[in-house]
Image 1 (spheres, rainbow, N blue to C red):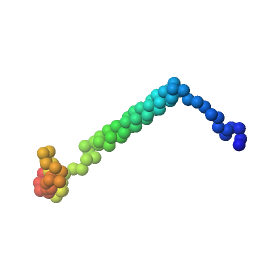
Image 2 (image 1 turned 45 degrees about the vertical axis):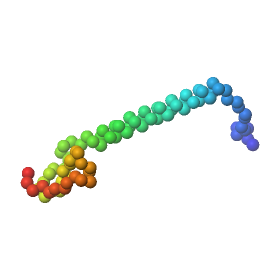
Image 3 (image 1 turned 90 degrees about the vertical axis):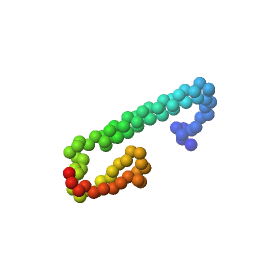
Image 4 (image 1 turned 90 degrees about the horizontal axis):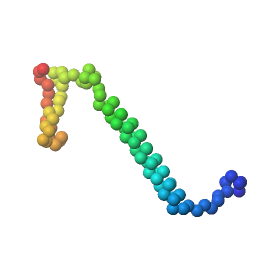
Length: 83
């Protein structure tokens, strides 16, 4: 076996294990923070359409009448007859 691949026996002390655990927690927290920041930016950009890009209502369009106190399956459908 080549020397650079030779495994050596090491003993870990309680302090070494504690240091590794803290390092692992810090890395996990940094990853979570980076993901959260990127994810929130993506969500903000997805919901910031200028009004010109939103579809304009026209006569004949099918629309949903949202009722805040009813489940979505019970929302009524309607057709625009005049503006």
